[in-house]
Image (cartoon, rainbow, N blue to C red):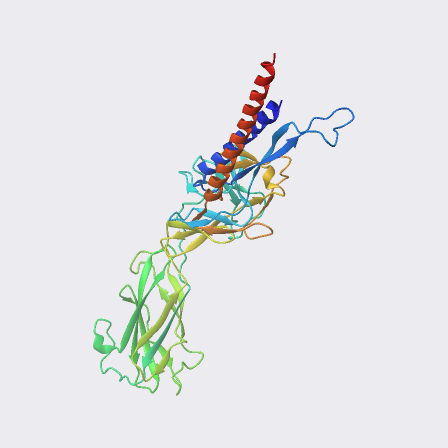
Length: 406
């Protein structure tokens, strides 16, 4: 009687429904991968082997294969969320055990480590003292929350136009009297302690043709013993090598500084055209101290810290791992897998290198479960289950008929 075939069919169909149900349950799980039940037929064999006309004895579940296809990348509002677009896994460490995941929902704990919701620390490559990535063994990624050190100004420059139609003032220069100069502008520079100083430049048209005098003050105090002189040619360009000066702000001027600040002032890009005074661009290479304001990740996995002083600094690079046979990874739950003999050893590198996918910040990879297809598969599995139950019912009726023979 075909009880055994029907029973094996019921078990296989039930197992298939389990797999489908698990897929449906994880349709909204970030980084989850769908699975597929794979079946194999069963045949009894003797010492001489099974005959060509042998009847099978049922079915078995050969394996439950994970499907590591790409899920949709969905944008989020968390800058530490990361999605892998392509192959690879995030490498994490939980109490010394190495795990791998596609779930990029990360956060920063109280110690500055980038972790998952269950506390597994994200692995990456640290940044050395020169700001370069140390591509050795990956370590737990830790963000430094210390203030960034200030950088004193060494060069300040301005692009501007001085009106060639201006007339020289008739009285001696006085920064408090706007009638004694033609135009003025201000910029901020920074000393060794990160304190900012407001440097004001006053432009006075000279009685000499195509010549201007420039006076400078820092925090209201003069820092030029004599006016700086600029000359322009007939085309309105600064006569080379003019327009380059050295200015010094002494200690105690404005905000207290540890020492005097000397920086170069470059006005060689200034012009003298018959147009109103205008400032095109002001730049300087110094900045004050800054506190960590946020983090972003670029496509190659570098975590960049953004500071309140407008500066940015790399904090580390996310490490990705890939396997020759990812379907052999052992699922651990909590969106994590572990390495097995069948999966092979991981190949670890930076995102976008080799076979590893690129990284997208402020985004996560959604589950690759096709909910519509799973519901259709559920109907098919249900029908298979009913058909196998009918096989057992029919065999039972046949057996009952035989038992009732007189």
